[in-house]
Image (cartoon, rainbow, N blue to C red):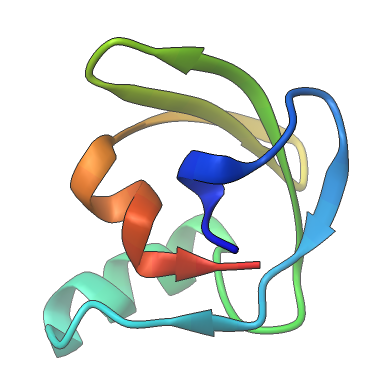
Length: 70
């Protein structure tokens, strides 16, 4: 299942991130978005979703939400 399919306000564990871009993977790592970390979808939006990772909230687009496997 990907973040795009996740239920809002339920905590999940990131299983895999399949972006194919090392620079993007490094950026996600700085946000705390990496394999084994807990992530919660706060809200689904038209162009993506809002997620909570650690103490931060971030808006991510649909393409990236589909690349994060939970």
